[in-house]
Length: 348
Image 1 (cartoon, rainbow, N blue to C red):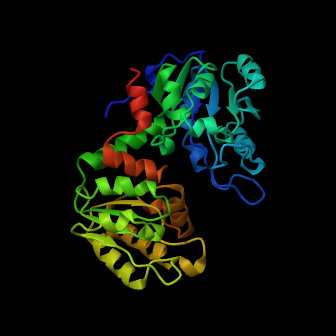
Image 2: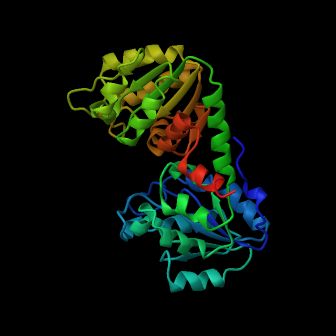
């Protein structure tokens, strides 16, 4: 899939609206616990700075429900970004749209960055409000989407802004598409998909992947959802059994999953199969993680929780690729595109 790159836009000395994915975990005392998602944006940011662009970063953190939540402010993220780009002037607007943001944008110098407050503090973001999207677009000359993980969402900052600005994709986004396109179009077989976690949105994508995958292994809370039993009525699609507490898959299920994983040549994993955060419920996810690594298959893992599990078990560097978004990864594999892609392609 050929997509427009940031290199295809004239960004020199321009105001560039950059949508990043800074949905990072925070510590109890409000510091960034894992800066991976910030690191993923640096190649695009550094390119823009070299072009003397004026960079306006928009992003979100967690799910504040359309209202300001002090503990979910982007301030800790901005402080971490300042450390990572210590020679760059970086300012933070504690509002999204408003007079302060307009003033700070107007005063923004070349090779400087302005970060706006958490987009999801305003329900207009998730409601895909057109006026909200236009207000953001009015701040800049062009738009770059480098937030693959949320590009399966119909949100204003993903599908709304490209209606009003010349748009393209950042380097991290393009890398995601390159890796996933190869898997989707020509995977080594057998293909095993492992589904876990709690997000019901995975069910629809998984249903569309039943004819593509050789095995689909389902664990975690997804086992309890009605859409899953219907989906796994196909040959070689395996529904995991949960323990009495429902917090992990059973030992018998672990054995079944391992048998399928051992045969795999390609593995796509989205979501832990149990509440791995607690030691007493980590066994299923730990055993599956080890099986994936030991299988020798080309393994792609998606989503923050799955990455966190691999990190906990010391295996994060032993998989081939970590996608920034589990839901977006599955959606792209199922459809071959995303709303965020179509929004920009449609404006070309």
